[in-house]
Image (cartoon, rainbow, N blue to C red; front, side):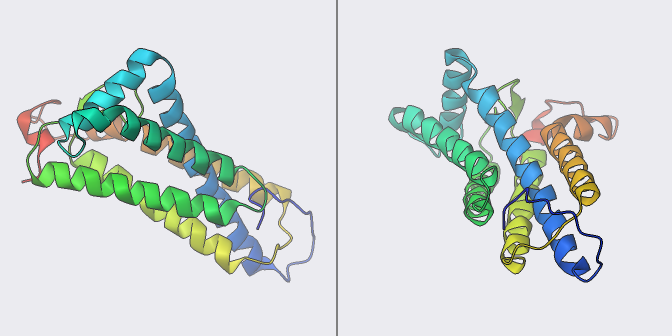
Length: 207
């Protein structure tokens, strides 16, 4: 199903199909915006890229000699997901790439936390923060969104007529969801209980 295929139709006979289509669009927008922000942040200049590569070594999951290749591979996978999701008819492969990448990143964060390894998170390349449970939750949510988008796209394999106003709402919902995920660290800090300052040791490991 083309991700942004819009056909104006007044009949309500395809309401279910339209709803599934809106879900796919919203999920696609989330993935596109989040991955695009991640790519820009990590690849905006040489220093940002090197900092991201160093952060991979900090997890002790990537050997120093593989840091450049691994960092490049992550960025290329993110770019591939964005391009596929933005290409009409390629939404399903795009969601599959996004889900696989998010699952790998979630597993990497979980492994780092379970081994109590102190590492920095430079997912968006803008600022460094101690890797902790918020990053695990965010990656898990992104994985779930990608899986939901894939399921919605698969169920609605036959293009259905969707309304322009519904697409607008779906895109807006996707943009809001993407912003919340990108700023997830800030939201956690806002609702963090007193006595647990940002950057404290307890934030970087799972208890």
